[in-house]
Length: 129
Image (cartoon, rainbow, N blue to C red; front, side, top):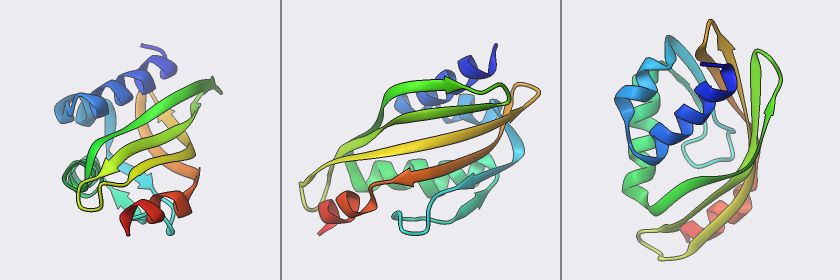
């Protein structure tokens, strides 16, 4: 698989909640950086921490939560993904549409680092209250 195909598989795994596939395409000491202003924003270490602290947390809090991809930018050992978070908050029932950019770094065909370069956090927080 090319690096771009690995990232496309990552988003498929996220959409389908295929956490085993996610774990397999990441290195064991994966670094996952979410902006501090983002809900649950912090740096996670390891794929299991991402599954529990990011993916499962989002599934509990949001209905129909996903990342709609506008475009992929293949930069060799990095892949940039431009898109938007979309969904509806379970408690407030408010809709969410927040643009964002993700950067993935890969080594030997595995994801070693995710960095949320930007996200419209105001839109996200507005949907929480």
